[in-house]
Amino acid sequence: MFKVMASSSVLILGSPEKLWDLLQPAAIASPAVGAKDSSYLTIHSGQDLLLTGFILVSGFGTFTWFSIPLGLCATMSLVCVVLQDTVYWPVSGGVTAYQINNSLILPLVAQVIMGTGGVVAIILMVRLYRAVDKNIAEVVAHASIATYDFYQSYINPKASDKQLRLISYIALAGFAIFSTFFATALNTSGVSMGWLLKFLGVRLGSAVLPIRP
Image (tube, rainbow, N blue to C red):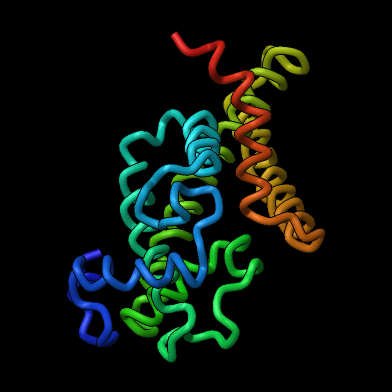
């Protein structure tokens, strides 16, 4: 965020005041649909409120992390609005629905502001967080359930430690392989990140809220 506000690679940026001034004509050229006065700065949108709810109900454990996407993505999105029709934008034709639905705005803006190094940093930050934190937690949880709640409870109550470790390894590998093929199938079928996030929020919201203390 500091790099955006103090950027020297994009001459038209460089301060919050400049970004504010550039967003005024941008709101006229490409209005923010659903926002008050079609402005990107009013922060008054029903769709954004729903999206916030979807994110929160699908991950109550991420409250402390929420400030990162809130600040980073909001800043990068505003920069994208300003730069999409300028010579700085790295892709011809401006912003497309494909870029939005597949979460490509963040790395594209990082490329404009910080070059190739910025893209690498964003990919490492997002992908490593997702792979190391989220995916590993889900894989380990699945292995634990398959080993102790299913195998030991219903199939082999007298299983030895060696047998339990073997089942755990099989469950780990099986879930990892399944997740890979499932994610590939979703991507091939055209399911976007935006649709998936809303789907998870709708499906999980009805279950998460009632069990909250």
